[in-house]
Image (cartoon, rainbow, N blue to C red):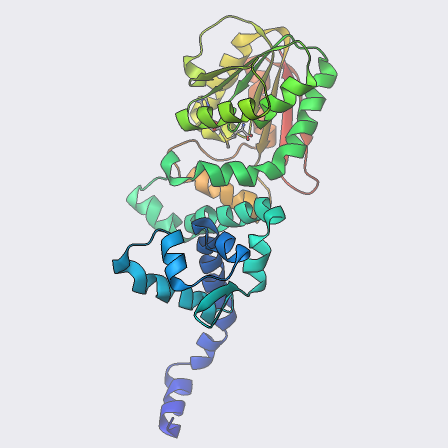
Amino acid sequence: MQLSTLRKLIFDKNIFAFLRLGKQVDTVYRTSFVTAANSSGLLNSLSQAEQSLDQLQQQLTIEDNKRDALEAWLECGVRLGELGFSAGRYRLKGKLSRHLAKQENQIAAAMFEEAIRYHYDALLSAPTRMKQNNAYQLSDQDGKVIAQSSQILEPFVEEAIEWGLKKQPQPKAILEVGCGAGKYLVYLSKRLNSCDITAIDYQADVVAHANQTLIKHGIKSVDLRHKSFFDLQGESQYDLITLHNNIYYFTESQRQAVLAKALSLLKPGGQLLMTTSCQGGSSAITALNLWFSLSDIGGALPDVEQLKRSLTRTGFSQVNSKRLMPGESYFAFLAQK
Ligand SMILES: C[S@@+](CC[C@H](N)C(=O)[O-])C[C@H]1O[C@@H](n2cnc3c(N)ncnc32)[C@H](O)[C@@H]1O
């Protein structure tokens, strides 16, 4: 390089400002590559054995006319140090990809994918999405990734269930709203001997998933229905109604109606138990709040005190909240009819 070129770069183009960003840019490239490598199955494949381009093309079901693009993508992984390449074969090399490829790290990998695929996208596109009124839809989320990442919440939700059962140790009839993959139906079925459990979810594929979960655990007693909560008919018949991680799937204007519906379906003395991320959490929860605020599905995460006031206003008594995660804005709410 000529001295004049260097002088121009330094004095006219302020090259040092760009060089200072190098590390950050590298992190963006690395996280993007490894996330896609994980969700496409590349990490899993390379964790079993080294693979040639031909083998990867076949395994990832890439058409011949996209073979060059596949090679270019893998080359990015090699350049970033996440993949190794020698004697015509690719292998896992980088710390991040080896970490996420481990079977025992699958929940962490799904949480990482949720952060990159959804939270990062929300942060990146929020101003344009707001201007163009381009709201996220339910189909913008991969239910499998969300189901897998939310497994980290299981111990906390189970603690909340125990909190509810302390007040009412032998509920005879339970309704679970938005049952998702059905893991808490398994917990309740195993935990309670004789109890009628009804579960609903308004997504057909999610109900099918919950059904598979129940079959896998040999549970036949749950009355599982593909239904929206608002379409559920019936009288006051439940001792316990649970809503885990789904109050923000309802718009803020719908939430009062959700609470009123729950109240109407509970027997006198019955309990409503909700678990949810709330306003004021870590950057992950704040980004989740952004995603839902930008969506057409539901709305912002609830505010703890506001939700308690709504419960009281609806007619619930003994309204209590409990922080489930130390230092994080993840709460349980218990209220009585
Ligand atoms: C984040 S998932 C939580 C699933 C499960 N409760 C858990 O904690 O793992 C929220 C679920 O609520 C369901 N849901 C949202 N609105 C609903 C409604 N109006 N009626 C029934 N289910 C609903 C969604 O389909 C989704 O499965």
